[in-house]
Length: 337
Length: 264
Figure (spheres, rainbow over the protein chains, first blue to last red):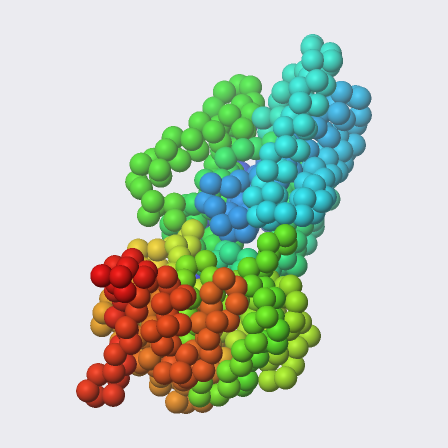
């Protein structure tokens, strides 16, 4: 049969070379930075053999958590983006479609405004993200008529706008010398100063969100045909959609709480993944996660090395992502379908 | 498997489309649903599939009320061929057909070799194997329609509901699909389809229901139900029903306005 490319395991090869490339890039990223580290030196630190204290500190306390965080954030945002795009049957959807980033932004900005410790800011960010999507869910459930998907999206726009307004109010009220720069920086996303301890709450939540999505991958694929057809094919569409939204929201909120609002990754990376492995969700999800991790790793490495000061991630993802997206659009429908 | 509707009322909240619909089709039957645009054929199908709730009466599958069955249980009994559409993502035709196997998979399972084989068989039966790798969004409307029929075949259900399965097909493929439909019924499947062409009902229909203004206006065998009078009343044009020398029946619509031909 000619349908060889759709045999079981067709995506495994792609996943393997993506994983291999990702491991190499991560190693390279560990060596890049103001403090010069050689490959041999890095390996001896990583494997616990003799090394200087300084090399150990740079590698284990600064670069390793940061590299791990960039991988986690990129993978999570791209995976969530792939979910939302499939769920809403729209390739122009990003993970913040239901207001998760706006809600997380409001929560974290409130934390900074109240001069709370970092952990509390992260927790408030996480809670704000979940709260916003929960509110969207309630609004959508309260509106009984019309297209469910459309109402969800519109409710997301409304809740996002309200959260954005509240965030702006806090920015006006915030101390312009101390709090405002922190708020601005947070809203553009950054992994500067991320510690291993920050990753422990986020990583398990991301994993917990990804597992059901990976297990239900075939059904999520069918859901992209639309509710009615998916139901005719035997899928409990409403329940599945709820599961996907809950999982994708958990994933997004937990990384936004750590990294701040990083745009573009969740929108652009799933497109690239779709170009490589096709729209089948079973292959799309791992490919998007791996590519997202690699993209974020590259962007964050740039962010900490191109100038003496940290460049916010949101600026770089937009500068790299926006022209790329235009190029995709110029290539025509095929590229993003 | 027998599918029945008993005194069914169909429609959407605040908008009843039809009522008093009592129909039945069993193994070997090809029930053709005819009726003007907007007469409620698609709404009836969606109600029979449990996609929208009945506004009154009930749907029975082999005597079992539809609302006692889960989505997967329904999908293992009844397959649906919707009107061709364009999905947002460029799956291959093979992947679309493979989706027909969903109701036979465990919650967390992926399609296996047996499912792939069923999808290939379905494509082969409609002679569209060469479309397997084609990008579904780039197929013509007729090819998409055939892929959707193949998906329903891959679902391997005893009942098939097809919403205008011949609508966007060329002359040759219409005949191909009609012949497949007759073949499926001969294999013991129950087929319900809607069509805008009474000739198709005459060609493959064992039963006919003529739907007009949300009511079943005529039922029975094609010969009994589709007369010049019933068709003229439903479609508001003059229709002649002619029997050909080989025993087949065709309908000839008059191009004059309804009633005018009598005056001239």
